[in-house]
Length: 67
Image (cartoon, rainbow, N blue to C red; front, side):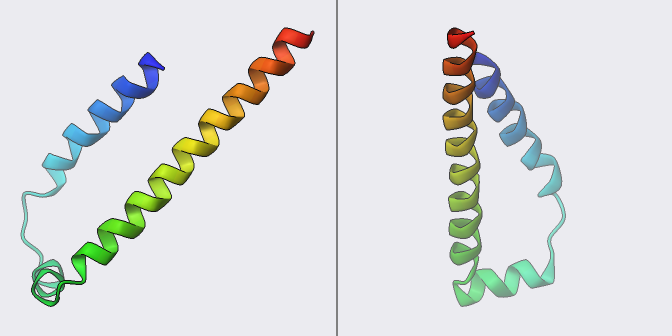
């Protein structure tokens, strides 16, 4: 679990490096309010991947204990 948390911290701090340059498309999406849809979809996908990995880890742990 510590590895996952440290990975997330490194990942989230690296996003700052990519956001240095303004993009016209992003400005238009912010103006239209569609940027929140994009952020929501990315968040849902990210949460889904994390949930899948946690469930997979639990299943693997059960299998390892059974052997």
